[in-house]
Structure formats: C-alpha cells, structure tokens
Image (cartoon, rainbow, N blue to C red; front, side):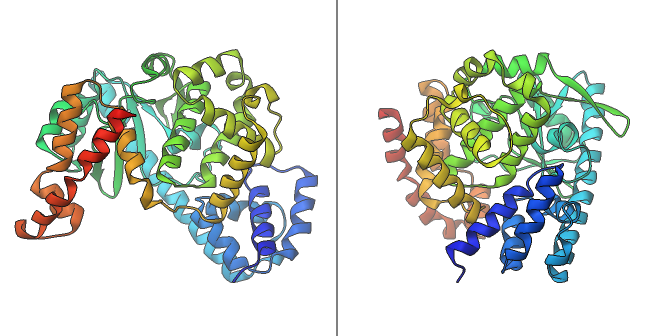
Length: 393
C-alpha cells in the first residue's frame, strides 16, 4: 500500500510535467523531485489513467530525468506516446476527409475538444490523447450531415427508442455516435444544452481557420472554446469522472490565448452558458496548481470552504482518475432530461427510456434473446421516480 507521502510526491511531479515548455528553474525542480519517487509504476499508472502519458513521456526527456526512471517505465510511456501519435494522425485524416465531404455539400464543420486543441495549443506534435472525433455543425444542418456520413460508410449507434427520432435534436448536445474503421464521431449541434444557444451560434459564425495537412479546418474562437471545455468538465463531474488532461487543456489555452479568454465578456458569457460556478472553481484550481497569473476577480465568488472543497476534490480525482461513480446515474438522468424542452417531449423521453428498442436492450444488457431482456424492462420502470423527482426540482 502506498503512503500519503508517496501519493503526494507522485502527484506533484505529475503536475509539474503537465506543461509543454519548461524554464530552467522548472527543469531543475523536476531533477530535484525525481529521485524521491519510489514507485514509478504507480507514477506511470497515474499518467496513463489521467490521459497524459504521451506528454509526460516527452517531458521526462525534456526535463532530463530519464536516469531516475526505470527503463521498463520509460519503454511503456514511449510506446503509449507512439500510439497516441498514430491515433492523432489517424483521427486527423478522418477529420479532414469529413471536412471536405461536408464542405462539398455546403456544410461547415468545426473541430472540438481534443482535435481542435491538438492543432491550436499542443503544437500539432501528436501529444493530445484522444479516443474519438468531436465536431460541431449548425443545428439546421446537423441531421443532414449525420445522414451524409452514414452514406459514406459510418454506422450509427442504435437509437435507444424509435420514439427518440422525434426528439433527436432535444436530447443532449450531439446525435447518436457514428463509427467507421475504429473511429467514433460525435456530431454536436450545441455546446451548452438549451442554455447558451446564442453562444453556440456565435462560435459557429466566428469560427477560426486552422490548417491540417493542407486542408482548411475550423475551430471555435478561444473564449467560447474555453467555456465549452468548462462545460465538458462539468458534465464529467456529474458522472463523478476525472482526468487531469482536461485541466492541462485549459492551462495551455490560457497560456497561449489568455488575452482573448480572460476579458470582460468571459463572466457574462459563462453566466449565459450556466457554467459560472464551474468556471470560478476551475480558474481557482488552475491558479493554484499551475504557474499562471489569473486575476483573483474571476474566483472571488468562491468562499474559503468552497476553495478547500474544490481543492480536495481535485486531488482526490488526480489520485483516482477515470472512475465513474455509479451512484451518479440519477444525476446524469436529470442532466439529460433538463436538455429536453416541452412537456410532450419530456414524456416521449420518459417512455422511450423505459421501453427502448429490443436491439438496444440486447446490447445494453448483453443478452441474446427477447425472453432474457424482458425482466430489465420491468426494472427500468423505476425511472418514473427519477422523472418525477427531476420535474419537482
């Protein structure tokens, strides 16, 4: 069993290596801290589970601490770095192909999250780990684009219920996942659920151009991209899920785009997107754990107990990354229900959720026959209580 001291030393070095460039003082500090690490397997495990193995591998070399790290650990991290590089190249190629296809049909597609960050703040070095491609398309063209990609060989994840086809643009922020050749694509039609729709449209209208292998692609302007990532962290928080990778994303965005992000419009737009509390908490954590100057006015709304609670939750997540709390299922249900507008649509959501399609149920519960899944339909009727509780709240 690792001691608290071991955990502390691991996380402090890990946070130090969450960067893309280093001063000589930072390199010297890394060389001072590295010999104190007693369990490099545990350290590398934290890097992997926090989604930062690739950049940590590079930074171990950059800071000159390879002699302190067992060769087995170095090899493992380097293998993951190479895997990340290949994955980024693979997803990027798919993204440029989708961009060209949709552009030929008069549809503009914006890259989101990992894809956008890789080419705007990570320097295009293949270090931003990602599993899939997230894109944003104007709501008027989202369904058309979804069908276009399916005609190109992408396969949609089964819709939970045929009823959901009537409310497909009301549930969550994106359409059912598309899959092809090992790549998953989420086509988003909004960034902040029903809140902040004007911000989503502003992001589309003011999209910025980037170049990927000779193809012009589009990304959100920095401040809206930053708020969208805050919303992404909020959603993971509802699930009880944590990866320091998302905070590294935000740190690098501020490192290179602070003038465009930290301005008078940030707080008002955060309120419009319903992420004000999460913004304050995240900016406080970034100012605490990274060498970055963030004016205190952005987190003055936090009380001292709030700061302690957020710091404690951050460190707990850092040491226990990637864990989804099953007790949060009700919170996730309420989160999804809030995105559905109108009483009729909410009732459709409820009925479709309790009585999904047979194909969905077989996949969801890993069963092969109708008889085997019938008891689960009865089990799902309990969601009526979640539905009523959400409406009362």
